[in-house]
Length: 330
Image (cartoon, rainbow, N blue to C red; front, top):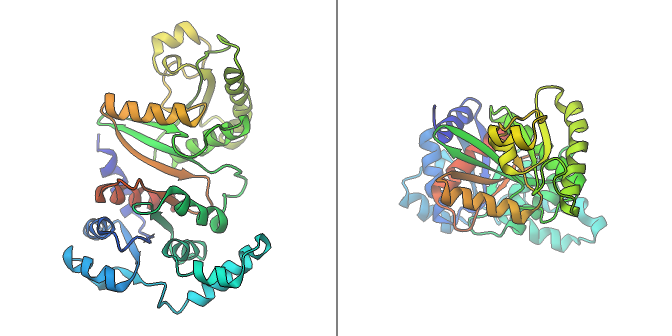
């Protein structure tokens, strides 16, 4: 089986999208851009001060003509974008002066480009916090139609399998309705990437074996999810819960703990009860089970925006650009 990276590079190359990278002043961004140009799976817009970006382009042998280099400080669209931001946010108290200042910010400028269809997606976070990357997206791009919850997921990859974990990066203590939204978004992400999702809504309880508030929350969310999944996916996607991880993943345990579960211990998509459980499980799976972890991948936005870890490598940026390009295919 082709590796996850090989699969996403090939898929992204099948329909070239334009991805904005607003951290052009970071060497990792330019190193990643050089790899993306060689692999030819996306067009790249790099944002940043020309005085800082051009020396990096030279260092990594990137032809300035091969990328679209934008400096918001000198771009002729800056005032137009400022006016757009002002009109969008004036009801929230934004002044024109504040909008003009935001239009100088590379992340805000790139987010407006995505909103206006001048770019298909955005990847940031190498030198910006999650809040600084996602706040503009939530303000400008906003959730997809019919989706109230913006969440995140990880692809957990081995040579012979791919599992999906959510939410491991954004929502600290999701409500029952948010659990359902996370499950739906993650199933949609799986389908986007050619993975047939078999979704388990996890708990420390399996089918009523415990009765604490969190177990009841996940049981109620599971019941709601079944109705929503039927309307959204028909019979294409299986969802079940509440289940302990072993009852969701190990057929012999499922036969004992949840004999009537349609998953039969073959889940590949896992929705965690809260951020603590999700984050701990993805990191322990990565470190103890040798999984390659790709994420957090943001889901639920009207257009794709993805957040990097500030400790990311240029390879991480390359992979995230490919994932973002595939999300932009819809």
